[in-house]
Image (cartoon, rainbow, N blue to C red; front, side, top):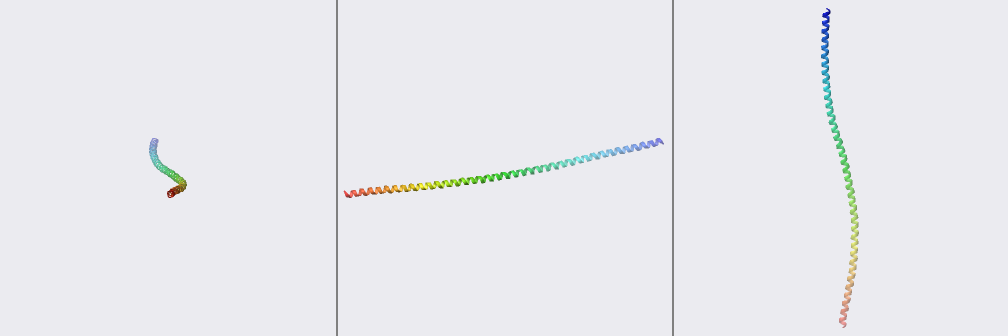
Length: 141
């Protein structure tokens, strides 16, 4: 009986060991499946994170580009306005100088015309006087 009992006990122990080994094997397979599943999820999350990072980087770059473009546009507009004001001021100064030069030339021309008119009148009076003197000498002689 001891032998039978011992055999039964050995047989039961082997059965438990077999079940334990099967349970360990099943647990190992489940652990590996869970590990693969976690790795797959991590890879998917990494892809999502990279995609979001790329999206945010592009958005940030676009925002910087827009700000720089606005700053450039504002500076160009300011420069254009400054240049326009400078040109307007120079044009106004040139117009004043031209007007002054024109007025001076007009005054000089007026003076020259008056002077020439007076000189011409004198010359004509002198010629008239000379002609009258010549005519008077003809009649007196």
